[in-house]
Image (cartoon, rainbow, N blue to C red; front, top):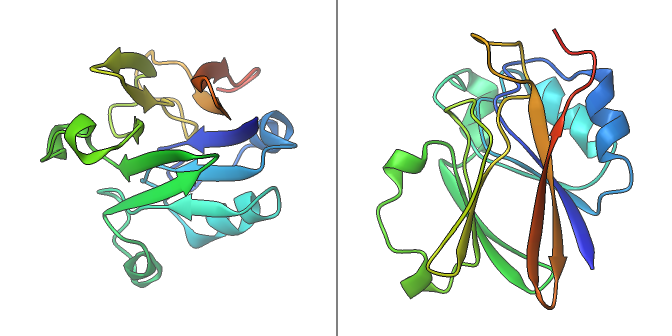
Length: 155
């Protein structure tokens, strides 16, 4: 089993609770709206990071990040993009096992056609009445096992 952390929409805020929740993961995926480069530096203290650019990532530092990325972890093919509405292909036909997105700030776990769609929600400043969340994803031979985690004490 390989456990990865999945985070999105930090908007420049890396809460101490995030480091606690992601302790021990083998890899972290950030699905955009990073906000500041030091967020990724902080996550890299925990584990290697795959990150993509979101719509708020416009500074010179953000040019180092692609809009989408495909990564293979734990024998699974994972496609990462910020806004799920910009997905322009059928992941199942392309051999993708997991699609990770952010943008909506709404946590989502859904399997469609054998493909897991995972949105960890927003780990940044609280917006509206939405929870502050991130996800972990256990990658096993029997398939991916996602779990959404509320960030306790987040405001």
